[in-house]
Image (cartoon, rainbow, N blue to C red; front, side):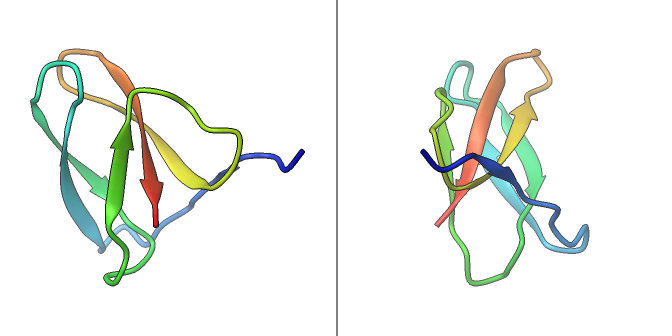
Length: 65
């Protein structure tokens, strides 16, 4: 089984995503301008991702496809 990896993105590349629980906007760093961040309330077993917490404290994952 392949292990999950956490991306250490360039802090200058930012995208806005929405919390899947409360729909509040959160800015996240992305590794590349060409990548579309995908939000998930669940962790996957593989893929580049970041763990994000919205202002309400909800934890979710952003994957880079």
